[in-house]
Image 1 (cartoon, rainbow, N blue to C red):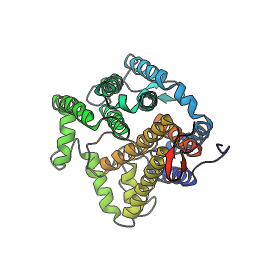
Image 2 (cartoon, rainbow, N blue to C red):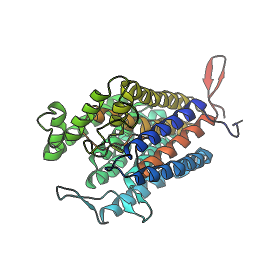
Image 3 (tube, rainbow, N blue to C red):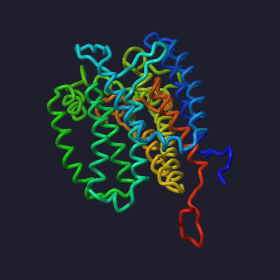
Image 4 (cartoon, rainbow, N blue to C red):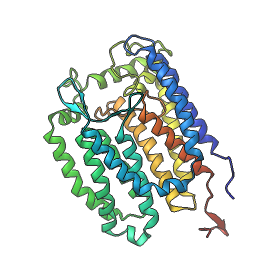
Length: 373
């Protein structure tokens, strides 16, 4: 029988510690003029709302997510279409970005919901299809087609990093289930050249990738932020300059409270602080996957694996960007970076993982696992 109010304490403590780290360093970032103290107050409000969101998503039965799995993809598709017809945000280069729906009190980002919707769809698909069906090429084509519809709309915004992220999470979910590895490779051979062609056709995207290979050449433009981020880690050393004592936040590193919060952690808490944060995400990854694969229901297994990837893949990409090992893409650090939709969705994922941790495991008799009926 499912325990009425139980959750994995290691996961819960990891989430709380990550949020606490975020509060400390958002406060530090907001202590100077480039990031107003209003940002910290807003973040504190979002964290409070996020804790409530996590609690609510923990209370929601897994069966609810199962019911809305397929409709959620349709809703995400509609929202991504709607946002394209709304007034966009002008960039310095004159380009127009369509990523947010302004609700007045809150700016909602449909692509964040779309990430979750795709995970719900893939999870439901895995549950409904037999292992033999999943090993057929048509199963990969179906998942690839539905995911591509969402990915293309996200790219049109344009939000290339969001599109890449969705594709990567879907790929990892397929590799973690019973899809044929051979057919996944075939699909990769089809889509990788398309992705490369897309990068080569965009001078901006191409320069972002080239800047990783030669940061000094592009320092004044594409790698200005990555270069300053690396400098933050160098200045931080092993123990850091002290909480609140960092100087990169003084106009040297723009968006330090969102896209480059890990660099601030590296500067003020040093290598030791940066490693501890990384260690917390590794704990979430290991616990999230281990808890999920033990569950009785296939949808619960796939959903747990999917939301674990949603949290940890984004975290690792953020860290790689801050270390200049990956092109600057604008990934926030889950539970830590300042943000609205992204932060709240991370709290939804946390609540779901905590809920999954209380669900019934596969029974085990005589060393042989079997599914209870």
